[in-house]
Amino acid sequence: MAFVVANALGGLTWAFIALAVTAPVTFGVRLARQEPLRAALFGLAVAAVCVLVAAVAGEARAFFLLPMLLPAAFMLLFLGSLLARRPLTGVMFNRLARGPHDWRHHGPLRRVYTVTTLVAVAINLVNFVLRVVLCSTEQLVVPAILELAAAPVLLALAAFTLVAARRAHSRSTTVPPTGARARA
Image 1 (tube, rainbow, N blue to C red):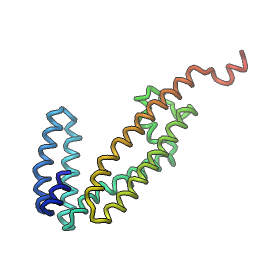
Image 2: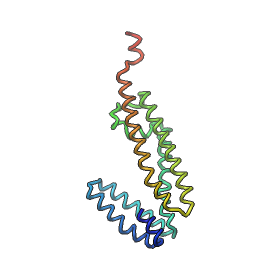
Image 3: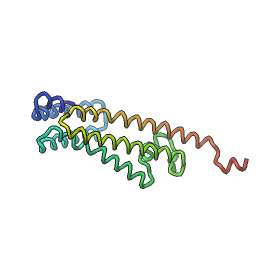
Image 4: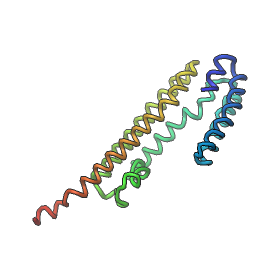
């Protein structure tokens, strides 16, 4: 946000100065909040790469090139996991959902993770298309807002995945297998 505001008020040079001030401050705040060092360094590195791209291109909108490509990369990652028959939401969230280790052999859990992985593909596709369209304009505020708005949508999907997986697992453990019903 500091980059966008400074660019709007004073141009690209001021945007670089604003980022040079806010990025280390943000890094320090993240460390003070005892967030993992790796995450704080990653954020600092992403900011540095984005500013380098903008400096080389000589355009402020180039700052959003890397963030614009990330949804496409995530979309391909989620699609690839489906093709490999290991839905990424299952790989990521099964342990948190307290699902069994062999969740891929449990139909209800596999369906939950497949559907939520497809939803993640769709979210990232929409995110990517919006970013491409918005970055082609000279408006930098809207891509910045989109950058902030994407996180809550993905967090909502993660929360939904956990709840749905826990329900699917609890239902599969309370319902006897088909063969057990036939013997009773």
